[in-house]
Length: 169
Image (cartoon, rainbow, N blue to C red; front, side, top):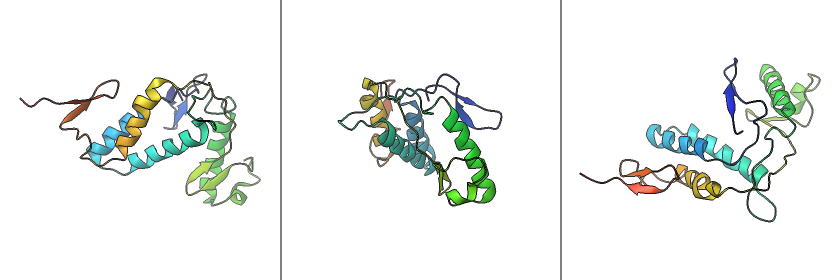
């Protein structure tokens, strides 16, 4: 989503009326830097989840990518149902739809490997901003590159993700 808020439960949620996604790079930039600094694999795992979501929801059949008008797909209903399903599935120790059946969770919601996967119809905004190619995909590439590709001690990335060599004094 374009704007997120930290809820009282400690979960990050799309801010109401701001659930569109313009394919911005900032989250992937953060994952890249955090992975390079900490070496924790979770940042690559999260980056891979973002990549899979982009491929699933933003990639267009005839080529290119498009921003999304509403990441919830239905004005927030899917996210609310997903949370309810995740809570019910966690409480049941679920590994399948059967474990949450009868608990008000639509059967299209699937619980797999601690991830709730669901089908949501998305509306594209028919725009692929230039920063998607020049920044978003660049940070994805760098996130999965070896540390000797643009080492952070020798290079800095400006606000447009252009690498600039750090001068030696």
